[in-house]
Amino acid sequence: MTTPDLALAIDVDRLVQRLFELGEIGAIEGTTGCARLALTDEDRVGRDLVVTWMRDLGLDISIDGIGNVVGTMPHRSGRAPVMTGSHIDTVATGGRYDGNLGVLAGLEVIETVLAAGIELHRPLAVGFFTDEEGARFQPDMLGSLVYVGGMPVEDALLIESADGDVVGEELERIGYRGPAPVPAAAPHAFVELHIEQGPVLEDEDITIGAVEGVQGISWTEVTLTGQSCHAGTTPMRLRRDPGLVAARVASFVRDLATEFGGTQVGTVGSLTLTPNLVNVVASTATMIVDLRNTDEQILQAAEQRFRDFVVDAAATERVDVELRPVARFEPVEFDERVISVVEGCARDLGLSSRRLPSGAGHDAQMLARICPTGMIFTKSVNGISHNVTEYTEPADLAAGANVLLQTMLRLTTTEFDGAAR
Ligand code: HGY
Ligand code: MN
Ligand code: MN
Image (cartoon, rainbow, N blue to C red; front, side, top):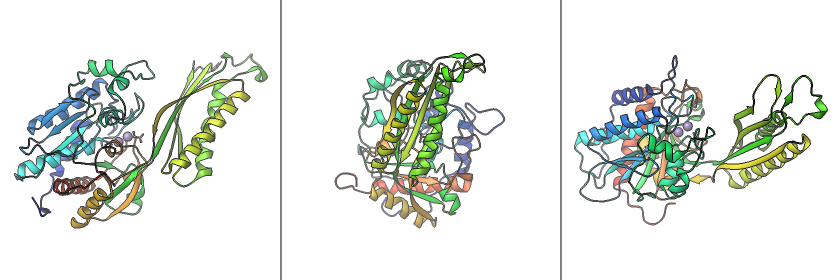
């Protein structure tokens, strides 16, 4: 295929139906959300369903040592595929589109191309990566990190959740510890469709996001250890209260983001007090602080300010503190050549587009280490995600998936001289 066949279009009803079916697995009662934390039974059932759809299309399926699954069109050329994909694990209060759209739209693109009987210069592939969310096992993007050689699979298999579950054991238990080698062979190019998960496209009424890159991410687990004692009898001057320090840290993180401004964000979304009882001063407080910025130097400065504050706040209350980095990824820039193809496809399809950075982490930021990579965003209604009310209109699902279709087709005949740019 040389000239793009703009008349070719995905079947949005089939895509919506699959999003619904997958969303029913781990459905959160009374909502349109779902919970499929990585390597849980719900994740296994979701994986089985997507693998069945891949098999029904006649794709060659590979499952690697960290449970990443890739379906590739059989192709006589032996050339590296143009690959798409994302994740099907969700946060505990997830929606039906985060990650799932990228995987199912990729499946839809391949089904559309196969049905049209188009001869391609190189195959298309679609994958889902293990534990993109990092909600149960940190860091996030764990599967794609291993896929590109960013972490030895042996190390990844030893990672423990807060509940003491171990990645390797859970992977065995759900039957997804596969034989395919990691790091994987580099695809020819990678492009991921994802919901924006923020308000920009909707606020500006723009249909497609041509994503420039992903901001840097820093997750630090903070363990504060004080002394539990009676809430009624213990004078305030004698207390060593880690709950108080945790509250001051959470407030500081917000103030730091406000002070830095720009793209700086800071979040304390995970905070556990032990024993977490109304009449007991906590013995320990455990939290994970999420700091992000598009600029690496500023992110490092924010990290340093946060660390200094925690140590000082703990000392003031005579509380012990332990800091443990659990995820740290520098900002990533996508390949200009892929970004331009995304923009060109949007334009040829008559869709408005703009460039923007991604506030969220994505598997594409890992694939960018090994091949020319880009992303396509489509709107999130009210900019909401990681929330059961997450929603994207069918027209925007179709727009994103059709840009993905055209982008993947063009990338099959795009030759990339030299390293990613
Ligand atoms: O945390 C993130 O940005 C992604 O959802 N894992
Ligand atoms: Mn995602
Ligand atoms: Mn997510």
